[in-house]
Image (cartoon, rainbow, N blue to C red):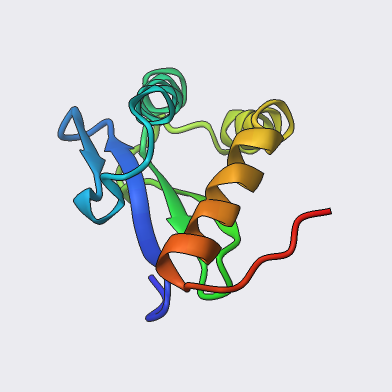
Length: 112
C-alpha cells in the first residue's frame, strides 16, 4: 500500500473479517452499514481482500487483492464487480471524498 493512503474499511474472505477504521467514527451509521455490506458482499461473491481507501488528495479508491495460492479467485468477476460498485455507488464515494477533504484535510470546500 502506498504511504499516503488511509484505509477506510475492508473485508477479508480468508479470515472472514470486516474492518472499519475508527479514525472515521464520525461518518453516519447508515453509511458505515452500507460500506460494510459492499465489502462483505464483494468478498462473498468474488473472494480475496477488498478495501476502500482514501488517497492523499481525498479521492476514494477501491482495491482488491488475493493470495497467490487462491485459484478460485476470479479476476474477471472482480473487475466487473468493482466497476459495478463504482457506478452504482458513485454518489456515496463522492460524499466520502468530500467528508475526507473537509474533516480530515480541513480544506475550505466551495460547493456549487
